Every structure is written in structure tokens, then in C-alpha cells.
Image (cartoon, rainbow, N blue to C red; front, side, top):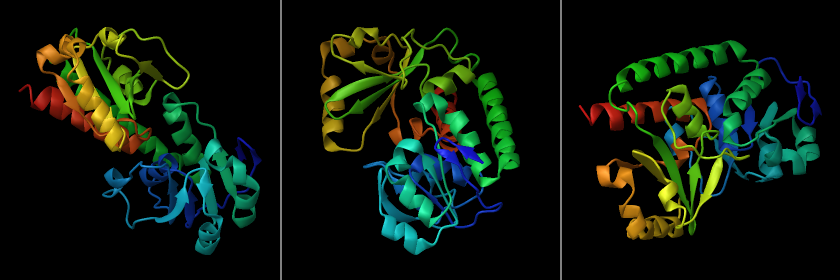
Length: 276
């Protein structure tokens, strides 16, 4: 098959798969394959996936810094990941096992990347089932949300270190909102789907319903705590309406079908079940 760095001959039914970041790991899990090992980005958890895989993967280090000795010891028959996770050591990885690296253009490309992983693993039929299930879940939730969110705008902001960002319509969560025909504030699209948010720009959070996620460290938590004390924050429509919800960043910025399904479940809990 062809991948972003050339051609690779992959086994027809790979069994010992190693992934180079949690996005590819989650995609493989969604397709019914439990990788024997995976690398992860720093401070990003795959705990939300634990009910979806049969056995915990062995850690092969951090993405972009995968431990080649550990990968070699696991004797994989296929290595898969995103280009920027494996390009620096692609030659070495290819000497260990067939290695396929796909493109990733921000979280707006999560669907295309999932289809690449499905092709790499020879699981196109399973991918079709995943998409059918997602489409049905979207349809069911759209029906349930028809009254609760009529004429309301939704958005997600993210606390990262000492800053905040907004996830625009071309982000992972933005694309899910769009699938549900939910209105979003008119933010300009950016290459990676995120917009840096300063205190001065806080009034631009023109949302009736606001979701907030945090990067997993004390600095991010402190930033979020401080923002809630600011006078401008108290003037936001969502804050006044009491419709601000704290959500798990690993899920709401997960970039894979399993995360997307969990987001849909949580939207039902927050916007349908609670309001009822």
C-alpha cells in the first residue's frame, strides 16, 4: 500500500501491531485490533479506552521519541502511526517491521486518518460498520436534542498551561457539533482548528452552552481557576445561564471514533437527560 513516506508491503492480517501515538492506537481498537504496544504523547492518557481493549499495551515510550529497543523486542509484524510521530526514525522502524505513516492535518482530519488506519490494517469492512454506528448515533441524538438546543450556540475551550484556546468548527469537537447540526460561534477556521484566547477576547465566547477541558497538569488547572474569577467571565451568556460543563480533554479532543461516541453519550447526559 501507499503511505505518506512511500510504499510499504503490509501483512494481510497483522496480529502484532505497534502504534506510535494514542490516536492510531484508538483507531486500531475501534477496528477490533488490540496493539501489543503503543507510544503516547506526554501527559495524555488512554484510560478512557480501557474498556475497549482486551489487554493493556506495552509502553514503547513517548511519541516522536519511541524506544526502538523495546519495539524490536516485541517483534511486531506492523508499525503504524502519524508522520510526525515516526518520520525521524522511519528508516530504523522499517528495518524492524513494515511501517506505514499517515498524514494528519490537525483534528479536522480525524475521519480521513481513521480510514487510512483501516486500510493499513486491512479492516475496511470494520470501518464501514464504525461509520454506520456513528451515523446512527448522530441521527438519534439529533432527534433528542431538537428542542433542548434550538437556536443555541455551543463551543469548547481548552486550558493549556497558562493559556486558553477555543476549538473552532474545523476541530474534532467542532466537526461533531456540525454533524449534529448544532450552531457554533462564528470563529474563523485555523489550520489546526484551535484559536488562542486572551482575556481581551473573552467576550468573543459567544456561546449559550460552554464546555471546558483542561490539559493534565497543575498549571492548566490554576489557569482555569483564575479565569473563572475574572469579571468578563461572569458576563458570558453560558456562565449566566449556568450551562458550563467541565469535560475530559482526552475524550473531547481525542480525534478518533471511540472518543466521538463517548462525546455523543456525554452530550446526551448534559443536554438531554439533565434538562429533563
